[in-house]
Image 1: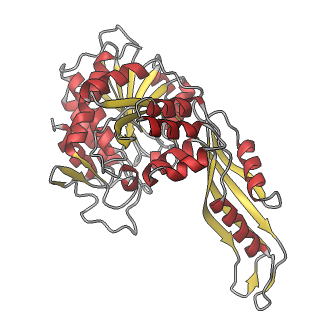
Image 2 (image 1 turned 90 degrees about the vertical axis):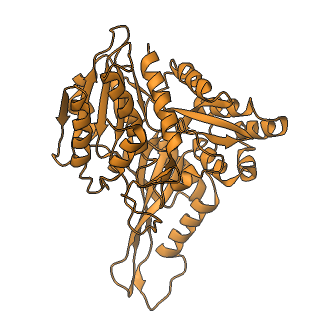
Image 3 (image 1 turned 135 degrees about the vertical axis):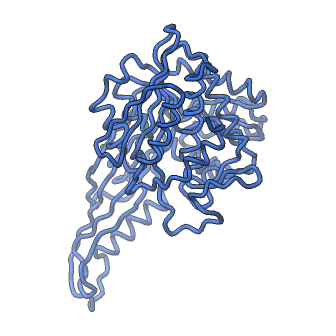
Length: 434
């Protein structure tokens, strides 16, 4: 059986760029490792090229089953300039390079490693351990977790908690190393904005036409912000950071919890931290696709703008649409395209237990709960009443730019960080007792 870092390198070498995905060979590789460890497996798929793997190790019968799940599809590398082969899985100076090293083949390697150790009897879980290796997370999840929850929910009977993405990675905040453990995530809220106005001949410039109104709408989205909302998870996250920060920084961080001060505080934080904190305090809408005009000599009378909206827990699409109209004017039509409701209020029963594991492995570390600015497959499993903990720990160097590497060129991860995470996940598997 490969050591966890070698397993990660093997996974990276499968090009599972989604679309099209083609995760079958990668899933088959994991399946062979699991079966080699003496565990029966099951593959379920809506599309045979996009399979999902299920396997179960029997526990001592003293606790409910624990689900370990992760996806092996990755985002594109098209148009990116990589220093090394994105699918080479190279290990250079103690660092593993390649697409998926962080999102999320590194996490899958940790989970598979723990499952294999349990299968070999090196770990002794109190309850059954279920491994689920998924396809299609990066393109909506309908062929992966969505399919399993809709068509194979019986596989997860009795499961209350799961370990999945995205959390447990260390960050430097106020001079301390913190470990955010994901317990909640935002909701998908895709919108379409429509700008209408008089069309006309391209030789006759218009003032105040569709293109000008679109420009003002985009400028308002860029230059202004939707209101700050402090959810319970965001409050716990900020308070956890403030509790260990020196006095001046403590006061600054707690300013994030005062909506009237939050934007000024965000502007004072280092850029990486500001990018992390801002989306957990407000509903957001990022313009991503513009459609309008058919010929060069005709001013279009209608232009469409697609918006990647993300809602905080407890909010609805109408809330975001209302905030956008207040921000940029009600004359632009905004309609809902897709809403994926997020998990309900998080079940934090296991948070302290996971935090204690991190404190054992890194006595200087500070675990805090995290609200994920994006979404994961956790929203599907939440429909079955399963609480996901984003717990794939990485102890990273203080200058490691994690968020600048995810989905970007030269994605990579220190090998020792993967080993750190594998040890943490192994301890969690043995101690889980609901």
